[in-house]
Image (cartoon, rainbow, N blue to C red; front, side):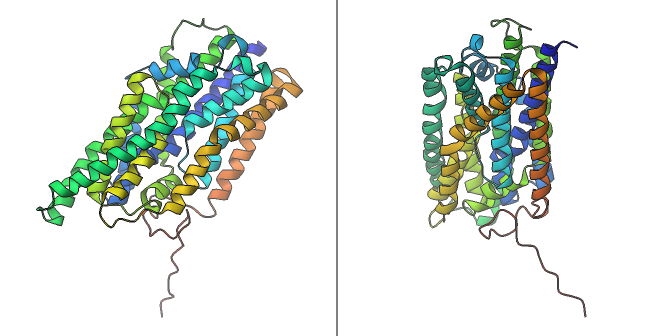
Length: 384
């Protein structure tokens, strides 16, 4: 079999694996607040989110185009660079998932690709201006916009419904949350699934399978949409718990305001082709929902840990991407990529096994927040 074809196949499998982790890592963005308020049962929430993520992936291709041609010079990279970049993004997704940190899959992927490109082709191959305008600036503005919109929205929701009984209001907003959470899932599909489409397209351009202006093939769209939907269905309960219970205690009016604000910002970014982090937006909306409700408590220590993770996402993923490229290049060819792929697979399996020691699942995701990702196990008293 042609070595170039083997390399391309490994890259595509790695890209779809990244897409899968993107799904379970980012389910919290759409469904954490609905699960926390009881508007949707946990398993129903992740199933609904999976379906809408799949549908949303077909609604726009602007973000895929940005990833494919707007981050690095297509002519200066190789399949090994694309593979190493994916490993960088995948590693960051898994580590932050393990610790229950809602971090950006988008920035992890971009950081990994940039790191691998820097070490292999130099700084001239990185489109610095495009990264600043299409990634870094939206990364700062999007969560701030979400905080502002959610704060105002939450305040208005409580003011406009102050004469309605709590029981009637909560019931009404639970139904409203189903609609608003669905919008976030749909918006997530229009933004995040396309990142994998873009990276596979980039790999095919690098391998000479398609030319730079060919666009995204239909099979790439379908497989990317399927991978992120499957990942979404698994739930990513560790991140759901942090976002739904760790930042602030959320009531149904707050959940509705947070989800509506997130959907509006994400849809706007997809329209303009900005590959922003849905995690940053949704986290900002949850914080805004806490600020907008009188006497609500925002756990700023949890928010601070998230912000710290956001700051190091790009450089951390870039470092792993560069290391993966160096390892594959040292061995050389398809064998080098296969060895790095195997090592990454083993380490990923080890992290999964470690997570099972303190599991978070649909049954305990809404347990009282105790300052840690995994809830404290309930000790049953012996029956006399």
